[in-house]
Amino acid sequence: MNAAEVQELLCKIRNNVEKVIIGKTKVIDLVLVCLVCGGHALIEDVPGLGKTTLVSALAKSIDCSFARVQFTPDVLPSDVTGFTMFDMKTGEKQFHHGAVMAQILLADEINRTSPKTQSALLQAMQEGQITVDGNTYSLPRPFIVMATQNPVEFAGTYPLPEAQLDRFLMRISIGYPGKPDEKLILEGNKAKSAEVLEPVASAHTVLSLQRQLDNITCTDLIIDYIVEIARKTREHKDVLLGASPRGSISLMRAAMGQAMMSGREYVLPDDVQSMLEPVLTHRVILRSQAYMQSKTTRDILQEICQQVAVPAVK
Image (cartoon, rainbow, N blue to C red; front, top):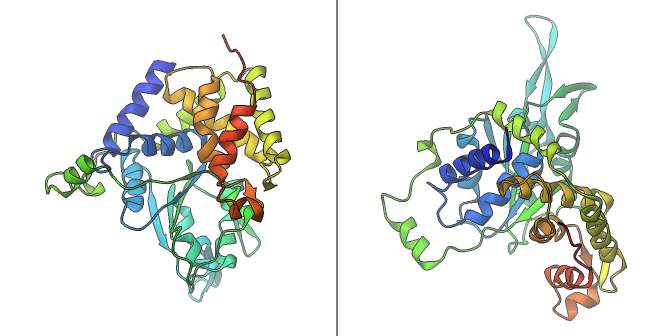
């Protein structure tokens, strides 16, 4: 596929999802960037904004298997990964797979379950496989984890550790709809379920898109730009923990995905800047003094972006 064909296909998927998710084109585009990059997304926002519907609509649009786990304090790691059981009839051990054996996995309210269960997803997210009772099982491809969490409810929650946050390519906020969009949502004929959607692509097509990402050119100037931004996050006086090399790689790949969305075969500084917030906000931890001064990670990243010289890419 050439750049124009890739852009046309991604537009088809976006338009299909927009049949049930109204007025959130930018959010859908970020999810699609995660899809073409083969990355995972943490969707953080208050209840009732369509997080679950968004993930379900994406799975329907690309004809991928979909599983949802509602995380609660009593959910066990075996509920996620699966378990081995002895079969009395055959005298053999049989593996019963968990929800992780789906191509699109919705980990709903991931911060409401214990750290032990949260960590059950780490190997799956990083390696695309799981190990149960000493046996390793490959996950279906493509494999994408879309996790949700409520940012304002702290009672009975377990914050995700930095090691797990770093596995998510992006942290995305949906936000409240505008007045015209909310009016459309309230109209009966507009409030459609993801179940009515027909696929406009296939899992095979998604894998082709992910392979196409390697054909996007990221010049040395752009790579130097990304490295300088990452280094600035580590050196900033208000930052306790800066972006890791994995964060730099994630920013580069997300920028490449954004270039694909724009119908280009090369990355521009604008692509890097547009991916800066969703890719790095959950990877940069501020010092307590910065929080006391009402500074946010977004403020620091914007400040760093202004300090780093933008390369003149022809």
